[in-house]
Image (cartoon, rainbow, N blue to C red):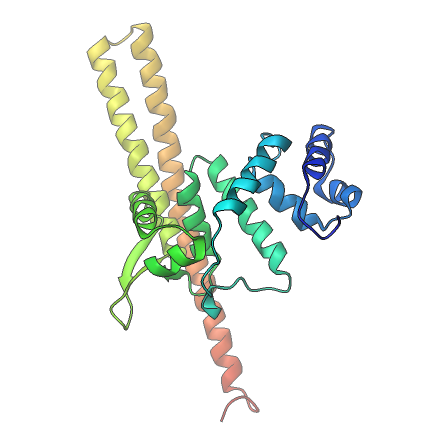
Length: 252
């Protein structure tokens, strides 16, 4: 019934709607459900291209069977915003996009959880509580994200280890990508010498090296420019705030 759990028939209708290319909102209207319900259902079960009604229904039943009462979450861990269902649906969507870029599901969930906190940081126990997974799973995911320069560790005032995402990490991640590309360029050019200059394979490797070299140089330059421009804008905003505070009628 509308407002209750999705039935097998509901899921079959969702699958038919996806096959017909209907938007989530249109499918939801046909079911008498919120759009966020359909969005979350699809993203939780493989996305619009891989959604299968029977598999989704079976997976939901299995999750319900092994679900245990969740511990109360700290206020800071609850999604903010006017519509908690919309926030959760967005979190599923964001995770799916991360996965489509090549990131494993658990690592994508941890990354999205960190990005969606106001502080941009969580402890291992907070992440485990938020995502309902084991600390070992969190540790493995953090190790992967650290290897990609997407997360860094720091200690808070209580000496707890926190995992942090901030603006500078995106720069560091881009630079790490540049280093990886440079290594590929070097290896490709070594292959030219090994295979013999002028051979078809050597020519191919040289073209690969030239392409990646150009991309690496462009990416490094763009990362440096973005960092410089954005840091200048941030500094300008801080100055404007200080000027406003010092105007008559502002502050003491």
